[in-house]
Length: 348
Image 1 (cartoon, rainbow, N blue to C red):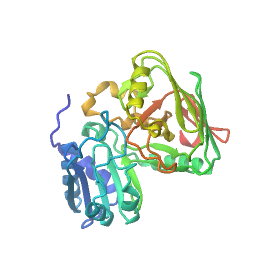
Image 2 (tube, helix red, strand yellow):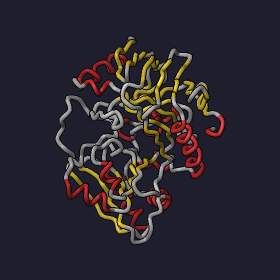
Image 3 (cartoon, rainbow, N blue to C red):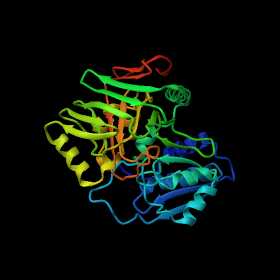
Image 4 (cartoon, rainbow, N blue to C red):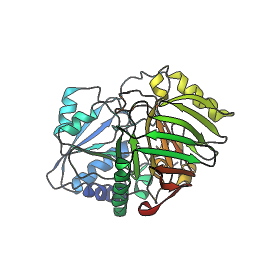
């Protein structure tokens, strides 16, 4: 188990990332956390902002009582703000919000209002600082992610296939495309560290086909490499069947069913990883408490398929799976952007 103590190198690392976010001396920066946040990341954020001369302040909210029938993991849909109006107002009026909540604000219902107020938001993933240090943003990543986002926004259809049997079609009409490279400079924008993703939130009723999770693919909600294949049959966004033998398939069926919420089965977002510094095998090196797994969403050439909250399709739920899948081919309007798990062309 890694130790959690202040290290000078980690203060400097956080400061470099915040400097990429164009934090200026005197800028007002909010550090949002909750009682179950990873304390060292909150402390490192404060010390790094002090080093940069920012005027930092903390908003610390008691982690809400559990409302779900199962443990909630890996959602990006933090419910910690609970629409507390003074909290929303304070965050919206800050120049920058450092999001150190456990689950993150990516799909939080209050996020649009916070961004509309002019704040920019950087989610610091709930990782041990050792992982954050190793995955500090790379300058070259921004340009490549922007190219991928432009491709997504200009495309009408996405198709995902694999030798394992995946054959998934996504109608991109009405989808909202996005991406992140690990820092944020513009008001009204959110990003996350680690970064390196191109993805879209499809519109309602636009995702159909088969997705095969093969041996060695990942269920990040459980923080497990799969030992046996699982086949998902997807109809009009919703997982209609979960086929497979072994504990991985049983766990997935059980966790889905526990929510008693049809929207937990629906498509949240689909995309691919862009980060050449992120590694598929890294999860094997960490205790579960030290690792949130953003790295495995971002490693170059993986397809990440997620179920759960999707604001574009009008769905909110805390049920969520993040499923990084290797060795897939991704085509946009017939042009391969990922081929058998390898980035193509300008994205490589």
